[in-house]
Amino acid sequence: KMREKGLSPDIGCYNELLIGIARHAGRHQSGKNSEQNPISWHKLALEILQDIESQSDLAASISDQTYNSVISACGKEKQWDAASAVAVKASNSTIFTNNIGNSENDDRASSYFCNLETF
Image 1 (cartoon, rainbow, N blue to C red):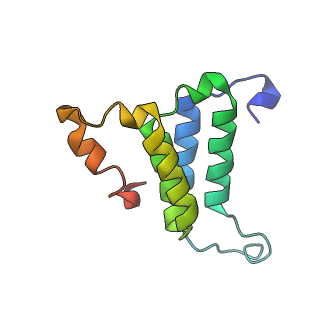
Image 2 (cartoon, rainbow, N blue to C red):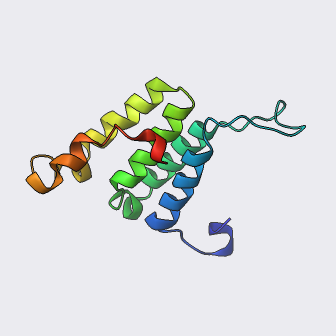
């Protein structure tokens, strides 16, 4: 909707959106339309990640927060293959690989996949 109004969301907007999606992922839907149209939060997160990656200016800004939120959404909906594919993508990214081996970031790197419940 932002683009329809001529606004361009930045990586911060996308990350906040992905955090919200990750928080709702895996929760049971309630309401009379929930069984007819259940929300697949992990698919939405994957679509947003794909949208980010398709925009060169945003793709260069992808952070570990971006990947963590998508992995969390996939994991909470037990979509292990999708979570694994994003984890591989994250581990191959310069954001992640530049931080590995740096003693300051060793704890951060080792806990990268350990705390999916946070989001």
